[in-house]
Length: 435
Image 1 (cartoon, rainbow, N blue to C red):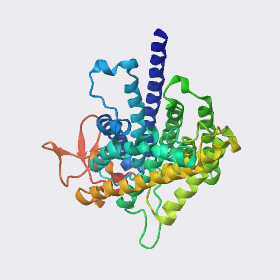
Image 2: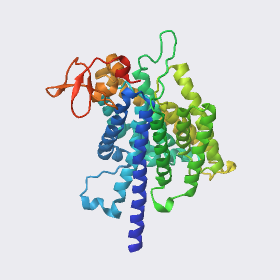
Image 3: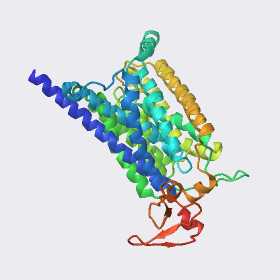
C-alpha cells in the first residue's frame, strides 16, 4: 500500500511539473507577440495573455473539464485529495493546454481587437468549443474514436495536440482574423503592401526560447504518469524542433522572425506523432513544417492579404494539420514508426477539427461583431491599444490623464516624468505610435 501511495505521489509531481512547464509557455506566447507587434501595442499583448489565462481557468474549471471528461469539482476538499489530488493536477495540466487556444488566437488578432469582447470569446471557446473536440479525441466521447477504429483499424492519434490544441486554435483564429479585417494602413487601395516589421527581435527570440523549452513539458508530460514517460517523445520533439529551425532559416533567407518561429512550427507538427515516429521521421516532419510555415505566412500576408499578425493560422493551423497527417505517415511501421495508426483516420479526425473550429469561430466572433463589436475604432488603433485600452505605453513617456476616476475625453496625452509629475504635450504621430 505504501508503494502504491509513493507511485501516486510521484505521478502527481510528474504531472505538476508538466503543468508548470506549460504554464511557463504562456510567457513565451506573450513575449512572442510583444516582440512582433508595434511598440504601441506591447502592453496590450502582455495584458491579453494574462487575462485570457485567468478567464480560461474559470471557464475550464467550472464547465470545460466536465464537458471533456465528465468530471466536476463539487466534492469536499478532502474527497479531492484522493491519490494525492491526481485529478486536480491533471486538470491543471490540461488547463494549460486549453488556455493555449486563446493565446494562439491573440497573436492573429493583435493590434486592433477590443479587449473585453475577446475575453468573452475566450470563455466560450474554453468552456464549450475546445472541450467538445478534446473529449471526442482524448476521452472517446460519443463513440467517435471507436467508430474510426472499427472502420479503419485505428483511432485518430494525437498524442500531445497537433490538431486538438494547435490546429483548433489556428483555425478558430483564421475565422476571427477574417471577420476582424486587416489593420489600418496594412494594405493600400491600389494593391500596395505596407510592412509592419517586428518591434523587438530580442523579445521575439525570448518568446520563442521560452516556448521551445516549455514544449518538452507539453509533449513528454502528456504521458500523464511516470510509468508512461518516453525518451522517444523527447528526442522526436528535439529532432522536429531543429528540423523546423533549419528549414525556416533557409526558406526564410536568414530572416530572424522566421528563424525563431521555425522551432515552433516543428514542435507543433510533431505533437501528434511524437510517440510513434522514428527520430528521422520527426526530423522530416519538422523540416517540412518549417518551410511550410514560411511559405504560407508570406502567401497569406502578401497574396491573400489576410492580416494574421503572428501568422498563427500558418504556424498552428496548417502545421497542426501537417502534424496530424504526418503521424499517419511516419508512424507506420513501414517507415520506421511504432505502428497502430491509420492515415485515413488521421485525415477524418483532422477535417472534423477544421470544420468545428471554422464554424464555431465564425459564429462566436460573428455574433460578437454584430452585437458588441470586436474591433477598435480607427482613432484607437491609430493611437495604439496600449494607450486606448490600458492608458499607458510599454515605455511610459505618455499616459492618459484621469479626471474624476475616468480617462478624460479628448484630453491630450501627458508626458510622464520621474516621480509622479506630469506635463501636457502635443506629441507627433511617431511619438504616439512609437513605431
